[in-house]
Length: 351
Image (cartoon, rainbow, N blue to C red; front, side, top):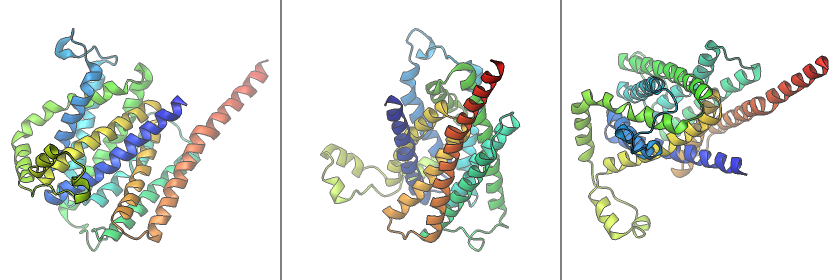
């Protein structure tokens, strides 16, 4: 029962936090497309603050308990984590739209599997096929979602000869490759030192904060552009249920600043769920779950904004959920059962 509750809790964090995070990010980028750096900093600050109590020890320097994992390993993980986030957000400044961004990042399961293979991990034919089908499903779904919203996705709308666009693609490729290596690296750390996901959550964000200092002037300029956005206006049905003090505060809050805060909060929920999941499953399983989450984001977007559910979206959904189920069966049922049968045969032979 506890395992079921834990699974439901992790799923709620990932699907609730990550899906909400996408909408808050789009709201910010519509106002200021070059806000990726500020978005990343706010996410890191809030996550580090909320994760700090889990590492509290008043008898030690900075009030931090002694890490159960060697500090140098968390430092290496933090450097990779910072680089991946910076590259992903930097890509928005190179004519990479949110749908294109999501599609390119959907290859995470493929790159993670490739990174694992290079480090000695082996996968069955069914696992490889399911990952490829799932990736294809996310691409089809993202394309359908973009078409339903009139977003630029086709070669006629995205100039593939544009130098900026090519740089954006290269940046995302590097980010995906580094992200895949980081996922396998963290799995190795957990295998050697235990699944201390709370330490990983804190140090990956806390140790990254000093790296933002050389970019202080850019961060200030980005915030000033968001701060001049119109005040936040809530629907009457929502406004009537909020205390007067909160209403007055929200009325003075610029829309983009509010979405910046919401983006950071939902990112905290999302990354907490991802860290919990990575502590209990493989790196490939994590990327599988995140790809399914992307599909849920697309479908929620369709329902919330009244867009029609196209045949492309249905096909993409079938591919994603079917491939996810196939991977889950292969990883959790068939392979473990095959190992048990092999062990039984081995015992019979020796006896």
